[in-house]
Image (cartoon, rainbow, N blue to C red; front, side):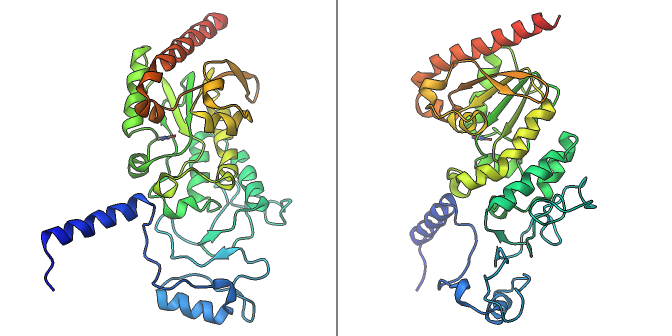
Length: 321
Ligand code: URA
């Protein structure tokens, strides 16, 4: 049967829908119960799929015992075996509480991991081992403990000036950020740029990062586990930047990093403190620019927050001089 342009448009629309929903790899027509397969059956299936993954030990259920990886197609980013070790911690000097060498967790193969306490503990050790922002970026590049990395195109580490006195923290990158590897470069980022310009700043005067540095598929909200796994890295990033003023864009980042429970309407505009390494950092939450794009009337409240941020920077400067 010949396909008409109309058919092709429909197929294209369907593919767009799948992509927007986070479906970005082909797995198979039939669901597979990996837990019900023996290691040989699993290995055979993986071979048929053309996947290069380490099979569990012979005679064990495919996902039994302490094997915590689920078979997945090999990752495009990076190479080599799964690694949760930092450049700094590459030569382990002892065992961690998890029983793994410091900076590593006992994960086999480069594939999806089941998020658990050991991974969160490894993330903490790894993040703490970073002595600089470059180090931290490398730690994240080599960290395979967060499954979002499997579907993201790029690590979205930061943008702006690492020496800036003002730091913004968002929730997680979207599609544009994932493509460019920089936070807040899409429509909401452009609005953020305009808001910064309104108080006389641009990206050379601020540092911008996200709690979660990989795009969740289809822009879904990161799960609590994903957030917990990524949290040590953004905490270390804040420590290393050590800004005078910290701004949370939206409730999610404020809740994660300040442990507050209020909604953004209640929380925004009120100064709080964030526990820095050597001092308390002035912190405030304001509406996420993506929300402002949907609710432009709220921009007047954001404007107040931005004036307050400018004032806080000026006051802090006076105190220092
Ligand atoms: N939303 C975020 O929270 N972060 C980005 O980088 C982009 C959109």
